[in-house]
Length: 342
Image 1 (cartoon, rainbow, N blue to C red):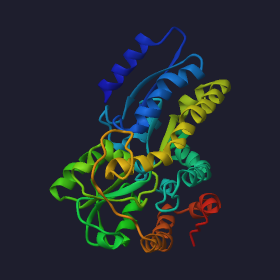
Image 2 (image 1 turned 90 degrees about the vertical axis):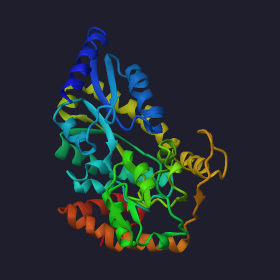
Image 3 (image 1 turned 135 degrees about the horizontal axis):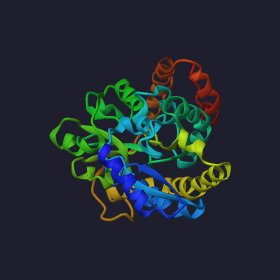
Image 4 (image 1 turned 90 degrees about the horizontal axis):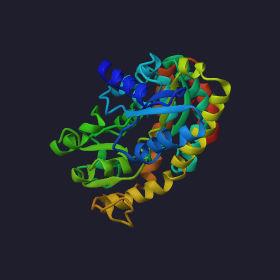
């Protein structure tokens, strides 16, 4: 880690124009579309053009071999200036953050963005208090769906199966449905599916396509059991406070218009295209279509999972988060989604 940061600092000193401020930025998974299509172009092109005098040195957390749970704590310590990764990776340090990405509440990109916008004030407080960081943006991975290397016809068939969840709330939901939650990192999932360590795994359809999960799984259940896997972009709070008000305003406007808006605008079509790429049902703009079996979730499947979410999973999260988080969630996310924690 120390050596990596020294190299970053040395490179910044050599390449930044005189008088320019250089931000060290750590992006999310380098192999996935969110980074390649939106993060990298924003930080290397759009942001420097929109914020005069600001330059960027960009890497990603997997290129730096960072532990996923370390990304935001290291940001708070000032090891780098800006970081972005999946919010669920940080819930061990901030259980209240689980309320950002709740399964089965948002079924479309518009619904997901409304949920995220309602949650932003809570997320901003969490990042300041827990990670000494200023929240700048929240972008989506597509809905987190289910890949299985087992023959399934619906949720009932997942009972007794070992399933890698995409977050703690999803794991609780799967366990309530009768599956066994297994903790496996994203990079280790293909081997785990191939070797029977897990029978199924949850991730975004596009992420699974890009990572080749279709090679080691046979059935795809496109029910969003893992929510939308929100990716939070945040800046070290001391760094943020060192910027003048004009720069802060320009950066906020730029990241909303040039990063968040485009990422959200493509999210719904991305899901449709990704399912087509995985199953061969439709045109695949990303490359070769694969032949996974598409398992259509029934209304009964959705109703059962939603009932478990509302009566078991959300109340359990509210108790674990403590404080007034349940009320804050009800007044924000709950108000726009029509779901309430009793």
